[in-house]
Length: 89
Image (tube, rainbow, N blue to C red):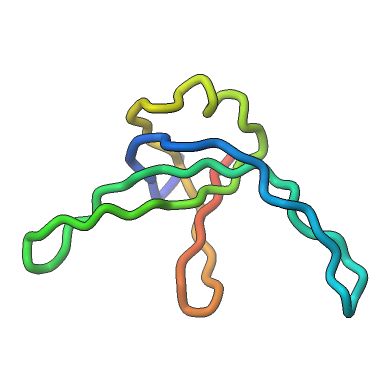
């Protein structure tokens, strides 16, 4: 069971572009991503809609649910003081 769950509507499913780091020669990208539109409740009781890019292992189950509301167990990491999310297997 996951401690965190991301709730929202699947808006898009895509593969991140592939590339090569010019200084190290290391390959990056090519991972499937799912964009989920999430409702974020603010301290002043207003609502902000956030589009979250979620890294997943297999995009096929998410393509079948495009446009639907979902709850996805997630893990969180931080890059440049901003949270990033990945789907838990």
